[in-house]
Length: 421
Image 1 (cartoon, rainbow, N blue to C red):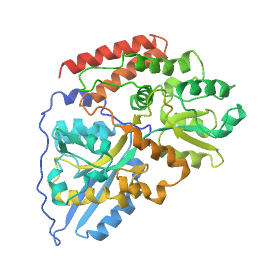
Image 2 (image 1 turned 45 degrees about the vertical axis):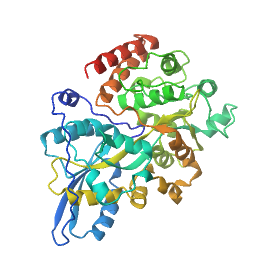
Image 3 (image 1 turned 90 degrees about the vertical axis):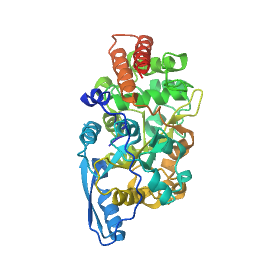
Image 4 (image 1 turned 90 degrees about the horizontal axis):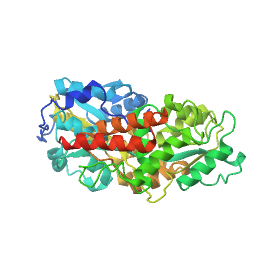
């Protein structure tokens, strides 16, 4: 499960990116699929959708009997690397389910087909998608994925642990000063106030970048040419992130081994009072502990009510021999009705917000946060930026450097990286 599951292109695949062609796929032939021509499509999906996707495929095939979808499910670990290599070698599936952060690197190597012609022919209402979702789907003003899933993050907290510590459990902490104060009150014995991530660079940077944005900071400047991580708003949050562990001792001692799933398990076991995550964690928590008194608030805000907009979309790959049939499938997945069924968080369609599925009071904070959510900078270097920040913050959590040094080092690495563009 993702959650803070911000998967990114990693490992050897990063080095491959710089040596690849910079052209983008541009198949826009929006021709219909012959009703009597039998077509089979291969669809690479995520493992966490394995219980949902078969029903969605069955519904699609009942309406399109000449198109058969063969789904293959991929685990989190190594997913993006596998996809990038397959796209580079042009031996991928017809349709691929991708994190919106992957659109730019995948399209930049020519791995995805542009969808603009199909969108225009079928008159898809792009205004019904969240603006940030469509923004993330574009590379050089062309759309390379059709978003079906939108998500943001909130603060999940254990109301009983809050009440036992003498804290008003009716609402979540509103700012980061309150988070620290509440975490200190909750921390006792083997119970800690807050869970933070010390491993998994996607998880860690998602948490930290949410904190930075909520403090009025930014990752990059407006034209994505310079790091803003050495500015006071960012440094202040990096210092808090590290010192919640190293100075205040309100995080589990295992922080350097903890990713988001580890924090979710600790939370389900009432071993931490709160942690940042997404709506995708609600069901697993309740399955693990049906009696937990779960509270959900928005990401605390010091200066700005702002959080990261994440999401997923489906794309036609450069190796698809049946792009028209593939388009019919991804357009189906992105409709308000089907995206509501298919997404384990929220639909990327604004009109789906009224669906009864999203009226649960416990998901309201996540729904409300969508109005304040913006995507991270959509540039090919985003993965390397995250990796740099992760490496430096890990060093700081380990006591090797100060948080201030960590952000200074990361900013220099990022500026050097962007200067090569």
